[in-house]
Length: 247
Image (tube, rainbow, N blue to C red; front, side):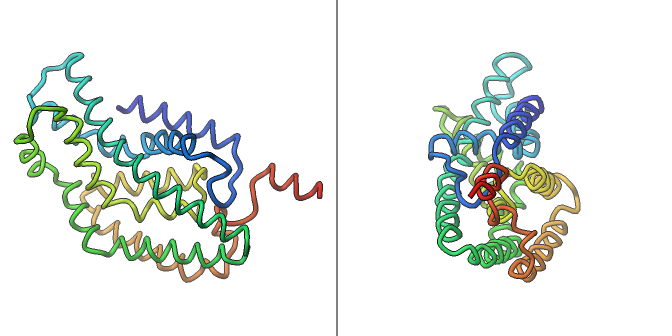
């Protein structure tokens, strides 16, 4: 899983180098966007979900010994997990399309979209859904024992999807800050991935969630007055700049 995450990061960085940051969906059709989103989610989420997947397969599921069967079961778990995040990508695509349309019609709207995104992310960091889902992601053993009673059909796939729902509930606020920061902003993605990893696996993770929420509140207040904080809602990337200069 670490190798898969590393490969996904390489693919994401390679794609980001060929794409500028601009408002909206960056001109990507929905199927291509979802493919790119899937790779991004694999890069950002697999390091934090790996302990859960391995615990499920090794200790609580059918206790599969090391070998191809265990690898296949982990792959099934991860497929269910990433399916949920890909479905969330549909909402992300809609939000990006709407924000891109607003910025295209009124460039000044980007400041308020950015402030709203940071404020919504802050509210989510402090909200009850975050607490419940983060508690599950940090201590999943009780839920994994419950999963053991699932019917055998596609069990690992369904367990991965169920855990993915908790993960979406925990992390969707962190994902929406990519709207103002830039979906293809590798530094922002790495920062969000680091926060997700520490929130779930570090013993001070709940306090970190509060600290990040406070940081988002500060960004929400500053965003309307600081355009440089909103690279994903500002001027198009390098190619867009060249076109503007040519005109």
